[in-house]
Length: 360
Ligand code: ATP
Image 1 (cartoon, rainbow, N blue to C red):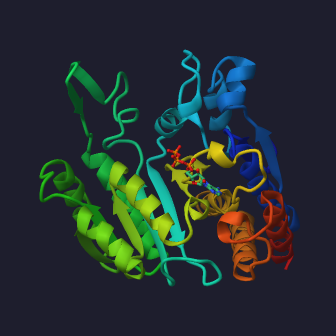
Image 2: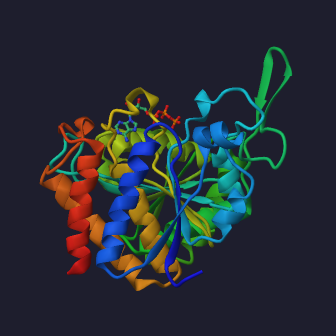
């Protein structure tokens, strides 16, 4: 392969077909203007792959992704898939196969947008591969089972290695920000599971004396997040708590269209917005592309830092400035943000500004 960055494009389903191309457009505009060559690789996934190739995750996909520097994954509408053997949910497979153990979900408020709070700038770092999620916490079978018609048992997996890895990723992130980290758990009740997670967070905290560390019980945190989200910088937690709290955080600042995410491991990363495929608004060119664009920006920044590609970091900065300008100036906003722009118009506005910043 050439010296160009190798990036995958996996459109996903429903609004994925609309927001992913905007993310590609914006990254491409910044990269071209900043002299960063990118080879894009279209990789089929989801409902379209099922219809064309008989499976939502075609053979060879994992090998193709392995060769890339990173990829953008659109939302997957697996709940709508027909009950066919090839109609699997690709999410847990990708996360597990590439050990994408950290799901990094930032939340930011903008003064120009209706928002329950202003001055919010926090990042939830969610453990991604164990916990309560039954499709993810076992190598075979399911973490949920029903021994009799009237009894269901769900198991939750917490490991020292997984807890330590996610804690370290969160502390490293906190060091690049306001140097404040809150670990969220409920070791008062889940004495062994949450207890182990907390022990590992404390052990890593000892290596980061420059980061202020606190622990908050999850129900207390859920309340404080609604009342004073400004009090938090980086937040680390287990899988399901992180899933719920990050949607709550998105609700504080304008909803799911404002909730980007990156699923990262040590060697691979995948841009993936927090929102689902939103079939209710698909096909109308009204979906907010912010979350997908900022997810792609996070991927560029991750590649820039972990693979030491200064131009990728510069392109990521340019995209960030362009997004902020477009939103703060209310230049082209989709209807969920109170604007009248289409998905494409918002993407165009951000791409044009990203190119200007990247060239300067
Ligand atoms: P999943 O469980 O797959 O994450 P979900 O049940 O959380 O999905 P979503 O598909 O994320 O549901 O969408 C919930 C609602 O939020 C949608 O019906 C849609 O109205 C809104 N929404 C989600 N994403 C966007 C977006 N990018 N732009 C505008 N509105 C969105």
